[in-house]
Image (cartoon, rainbow, N blue to C red; front, side, top):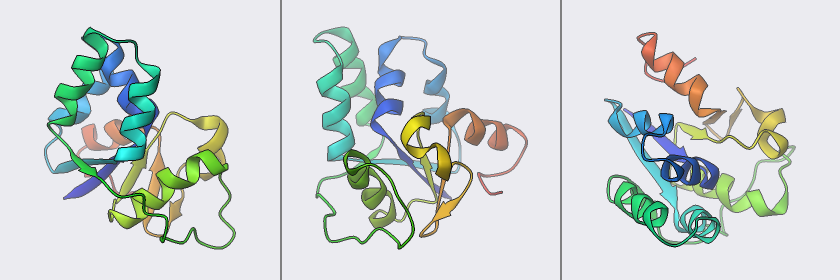
Length: 139
């Protein structure tokens, strides 16, 4: 089973529209969705009060949220992400995610399609495409 870590921008986008395409992630078999409290807080901070926040809260009921900061988890040597994204990468590693899904090409772009400490970094659409092709999220 894949352990799929969702970045804050994926959570935000899934909650933004009632029929968001990213909602397909919540229906994938053999995929356990995980995220961190840090990612949740970031998504909530950027969503307006009301239906969108309520939608995110309902989606969060269907995934595992790591509640600690994961500050003790080292980022592998040679891997560079902006300071604001280090907690996301650390959490994905600590939660033993097989994949980290993010739409943040500016910060994670150089790492797309690579593995960092066993976590493959992908755009959500790429992960879903692989799954639709009959694979689990492996390369």
